[in-house]
Amino acid sequence: MPTYLLIPREGALDDPDWEASLHIGPCTVVAPDERTARRYADGAFCRAVMERRPERPRLPVSPWSQPRLVRAEAIADPPLPPGTAAAPEGTVLAHPGPSRLSAAFKEYDPPASAAA
Image 1 (cartoon, helix red, strand yellow):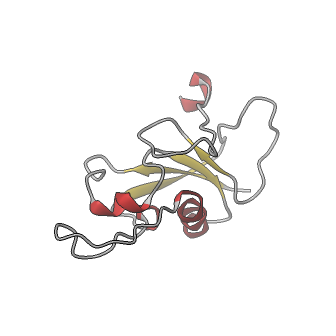
Image 2: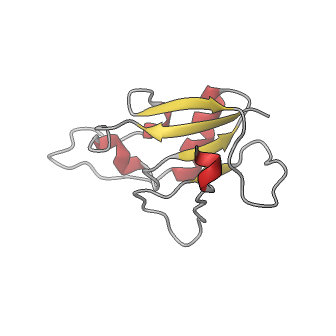
């Protein structure tokens, strides 16, 4: 199954749409294509933002589906937790980075050899 690395674009983290995401760092997603990978990340990190504020004329939407905010790279050899042979479709692994994750999420820090 193809795997995608979704990475927030440099300089884009100040966009108001990041308010709609629990995680604001890179993530690895197992999905058949880039569009589906972005949808899985949307679902994994969705954060409801219900109120409008004077400084925010519209409600934020998920940044994960927006190529202007998040770039996607297909990766041939995905970094998986040690002892994991393969991950099922829909697996979303949050890499360390700025985050609003609760204890319900487990971050995964790939080994240095996998990140190279």
